[in-house]
Length: 221
Image (cartoon, rainbow, N blue to C red; front, side, top):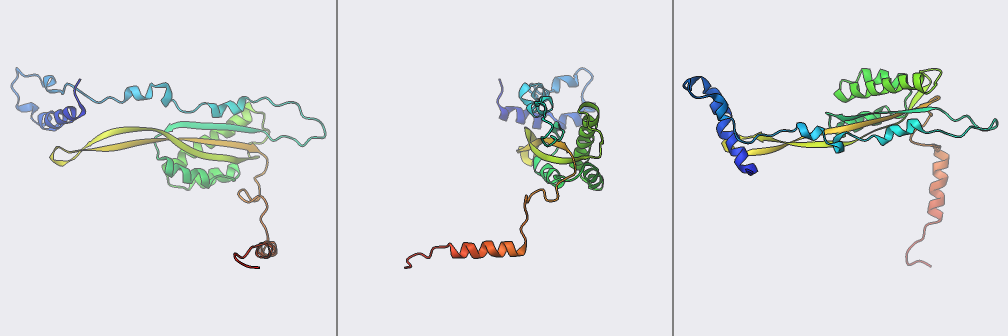
């Protein structure tokens, strides 16, 4: 078993210089003999069960609720969809996921169509696929009557590679992957997604005065 330093040294010595001089070799020498004894393979990484991506998020589509009573408020339908192991940075995907959060489906698709980013096209495909699943598999009557209730991205696998530098040095390069999740819910989108009850200026002033009245001055009477 050769060490990593020996493998990198052989790659630097037998890699590019010998490939450029294969035509100058005699006919008795086969170029295949110049291949280093060790090589780097990443194909087995994707065959591992741990790198297949999360699967429990889609189990929410299999949830069975109890029948509702006539006087109960109607439970809105929802559908979950995801895409695993996207060759995209999770930090860049987070901005796109947060951008469409709280929008209606038509508005989210329209906004992502004008966003010139790789992650925007992927998010658009996942949202459209979830919209199709809602109509065909979850008995949603109108496909436009949906809004993005959840949209987030998580970190996927990270593959380390080698990058050759000058003077026989080496560097590490990271190939990052991410997972994108989305949940569509039936009904109109809320007016305020992040603030459940936005307060007016007078209410904020009353809260501030109440906080000032309740404060305690240290070392006072």
